[in-house]
Length: 453
Ligand SMILES: [Zn+2]
Image 1: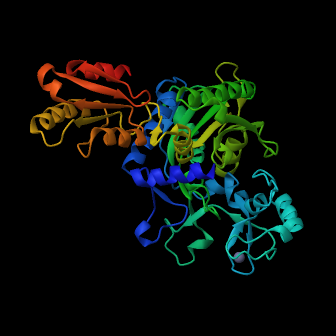
Image 2: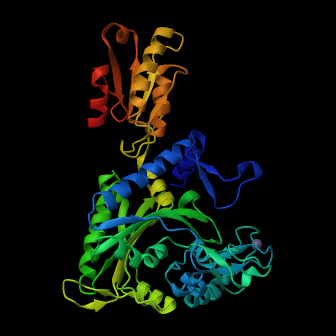
Image 3: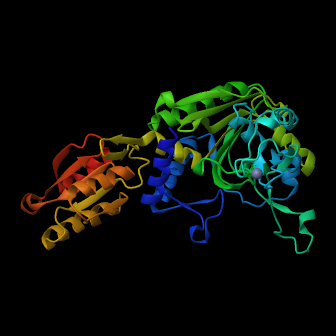
């Protein structure tokens, strides 16, 4: 199965989905860039998410808050004191490692949601079994300590000891939504229950990076926070869970590759928490968290900002701090899940069976022969006609079979070939990626047929 992961990583690099950041300088750990095809795929994922979460929902509006927020935000949220991973250092080579990951390597499940003290205790007991992945020294580790994941900066601080009062790159996008709760209320017609959705970058100083774009230090989140009354929280929560599960199914993810994971160790304020997990080549792992958070977030920000964030419910005249349910996911993780799910090999043919809505290119246009000017000119004409409505690829290299293979590998659902018959009767062949069947259709009908598909 790890073999499949290697194949996907190599495909991503070879075809320009994902590049290691700063590669000419030897790379920069746990940071990745999106290549020409990756940015198209990521944009498509974000577009379909936004469409289903904002455009098609009268009860949800969008927001784009900044990466930087008042540092108090992160005190109120608990990130300054509580947002940490268990860190152990190899005494031999001084590599810093995540204690829970080291435990996993020797078959001891240390849940990410366990308390740090629990993990520290388990680590101490099992230290002798654990090998340093860097220098192979066995059992020679420091005790586990907390390592805070917030990324600090000197933005807005012009002193030399800015570390004492740093500003932070946001560790999650949802805090910007909480801070704008009152602004959205007073500037729009939204009434509870309603949601605010946002897509944006977040940063976490992950101790160890693993599994390609699954866990990165800079990443993009898609989050929706839904404000509701205490009474309707759990009912809305169940609706949101169903809604988000169906999103993946509608986009073609194999149902057997998805499962729910219920959190056993809930944070004290949470009512309920489930993750949607995808069956990656390295095992089932979280791609989205759907959590019922109670009134914790707005209560905290009320306290720290001394602003009243309570709400008068027009339906009951009740006054309360709104409860929040959230759906939180990462673009990189979802992209990796779609790539893994779509990846298939048929003989020597590699096919990415992405839904057309997600595919980087919707259609590719070829002249049958690159050395026949009349074919090239006609194919250019077709390409120019389609490119305003569809992301189109052009290819006139090598033979037609190779071009098909090349498009299959990046998931282009349709290939159009201009041949000698085109010059006679204004028809082209259109080839379907999944069936490899070809049909002959009129150029004048191309657009409407492609739209339908
Ligand atoms: Zn070591």
